[in-house]
Each structure stands twice: as structure tokens, then as C-alpha cells.
Amino acid sequence: MAIGGIWPSLLLMAGVVAAVGLCRSLVRRRLHAHPHLCSFLLEAFSTFQVCACTNELCLLGNVEPKPHTALTLTYGFTVLHGSTLTGSTCNPCGVLQPLWGGGTSLRAGGLKIGAQFMAAALARVFMHFVWRLGIAEVHPGALSQGCSNPMQTTEVQAFCIELLFSVVFQLSILQVEAVKPSYRVHLIALLITMLVYAGGNLTGAIFNPALAFSLHPKCFYDNFLIYSLVYWIAPSLVPGRWQLLVEELVAIYWM
Image 1 (cartoon, rainbow, N blue to C red):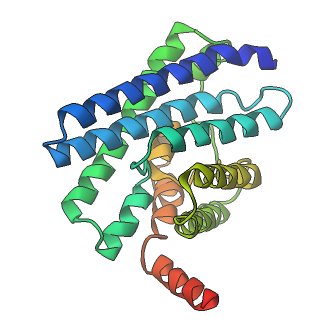
Image 2 (cartoon, helix red, strand yellow; image 1 turned 180 degrees about the vertical axis):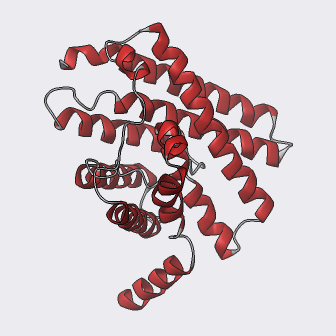
Image 3 (cartoon, rainbow, N blue to C red; image 1 turned 90 degrees about the vertical axis):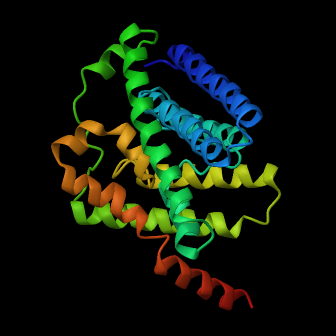
């Protein structure tokens, strides 16, 4: 696919970002007196944006020159998400970490994770509807795909890769918390782009259970046990005792 064919997809994703930004602004203004509902909707809209845009980005993986175009788009939209979705994690693993550490209540954490998975499913349904309209050159082919088989290695290796990438990502998030936000978003985007480059051809380098469910629902349906282990359990192991241990080791190292 030539690079000129990506403009309809870019406009579609820009429209999603603009619509979500408007919805988040309305939620903040109208529902500030209802913190639980406000938090639920903000997390849902944010996760919808990430999942919808990533569903579309996955269709652009073969745009020439490869893989430069795909990696550039990954970096650019990660920066865009980080800049426009402040205050939202869009990742169940990001909710489990403070939940495990006692920084948030079980009810609040459960609501956020529920919002994330609900939004992930809605994003997939929405993108299927858009693809049926045939707005972009890549859309007709997306409708005929079954399970895209993102795992191009053994189940054990895929489990270890998603676990390792999630460890690297979550630990890096902790290390850049003190960095100025305008710089931090670029550092995180660069890290995600590097992880996608390193492991995208093996597992997709997702390390986000809600996003994995949105990208590969048919794969979960066909082989639920394997895909739930690799894309749900492996990344979710990080916010537990392992991450606390790593934090202690890092603190000792920098003393």
C-alpha cells in the first residue's frame, strides 16, 4: 500500500480523537459532582480512543516504506494519546498497580477496569461499522479477516515476551514520573515504539489486556485459554509483588 492511501485513515483517527476530547470535556463539566460516574466515563472514553485508533493503525502495518511508516505512526499517535488523555491509564495493569499498593479502593479500581473492557469492546464494534463503509483502501480487507494470529512464536515465549515488556513499561512509567509532562509523553512514546519494533512481529507487543481484547476478539473466541494467559495474565502479573520488589531494588541501587 502506498503512503498516499493512509490519509482517510488519518482523518478517521483524528475525528475519533476530536470526538473523544469533546466528550471528556463535557463529562468533566457536567458530572464533576459525581466522581465515580465521572471517573468511569473518562476512563471509558479514553480507552475507546486508544483502542479505536490502534485498530485502525494495525491496518496500516504494510504501508511503504516498511516498517518506518508504521513505527512513525505508532510514535505520533502515542504522543497524541498521552497529550490528550491525561489522568487516564487506558490499561488494566495501570489500575492494578495502585490497587495492589492500596492507593485506590477496590470499587474504584473495578469500575475503571470494567470501563476499559467495555470501551475496548465498543471500539471494536464501532470500527467494524466504519470499515463496512469502505472509507479507506484497507477497510474491505479488514472485514474478511478471522483471527490474525498475532503470536508468531511458541506460547511460552509469547507469555515471557508480554510479561517482560509489561515489566519494562511499568517500571519505566515509575522512573519518568518526575520528568516534565511535555518531555515525559515523548519518552513513553519512544519506549512503546521501541517495544513494538522489538516484539511486534512476535506477539504484537501489546502489554495491555483491554487493548488485546479489542484487537483480537476472534482469537480469544477461538483459543481463549492461551490468549488470556499471554495477553491478560502475563501483563497483569507485573503490578503485584514483583513490581514492588523491583521498585525496592531500584531504590537501593540509586541510593
